[in-house]
Every structure is written in C-alpha cells, then in structure tokens.
Image 1: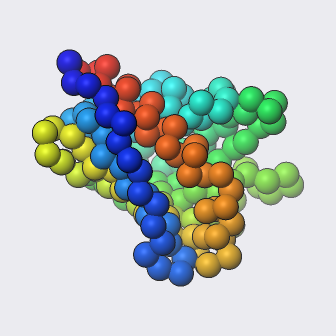
Image 2: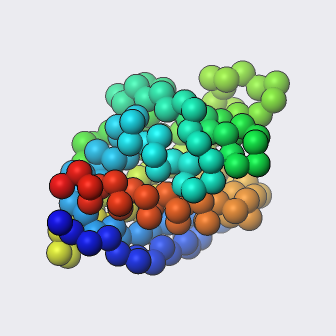
Length: 168
C-alpha cells in the first residue's frame, strides 16, 4: 500500500482576482478523482477536521448542481452550492461556488466564484491537484484568502490523500 505524504501545499495569486492552490498527493489520479466526486467520500474530507458534513448532494454532470453543508465545531452551520460547468473524468472539473448567506435564495448564483480543479499525473503514481479560483474581483479574492481557507484546504488535502490511498 502507498504511504501518505506530508506534502506541501502552495497558495499563489496569479492574477488580481485569482487564487491558485497546488498540492501533490501520493495516490493515483483515478482514486483522487473518485474521492473528489463520490458523495460518501466527500462527506469525509470536505469539512477537514473542523466539523461534520450534514449534506453532500452532487449531480455530477454539466449543468448539474451540488450543495455541501457542514456543522462546524463552533456549532454554526456553513453551506455552499454551485453548478458544474465542465467535467472531464479524472482530469478536470469546473464549477461555480456560492457561500450561502441568510436571506439569499439557496440556488442563487449571485456572487459565485468559479473553481477549476485539475488532476494531473505526477511522478511515482502521485497526483497533482490544482484549484484555480476566479473570485471575480480583488476584494473577493482577498476576502477568501483571509478567511482561514488555507488551513481548511490543507486539512482537506490530507484527508483526500488518506482516503485515496485507502481505496487502492
């Protein structure tokens, strides 16, 4: 069985409204993609180590919607939703993402960012995951970057790697 890594995660800002997160995980691409796209597995990694996921709805097709809800350890609920724009199995997913706020329609795309997630084969059977977020503005990009997102995503990648390795 493959060993998990203590891989590093890079967060860069390639443009005024973009965030790029890159992490290589020590698992084959098809298993990383499976962990990323299977609701039962998403429930395990998406909240990181910060809470419990209560909803993982995914209609994994172009035009299909997704919605994730978690209860954080601080006992507050956080919900996100979006629509899949492009799906290339084992290679690429493009989707919108909206953090749900009180009073907003649960299916509104207002304020959506666009995430492009790529899964590239790396040396030794590993997979490099890149998440490019187009936040639409520098202000939204900076708000996301300062939200504590980096620590949560780091935890997510650690769990994704553990899950993908366990699927071998």
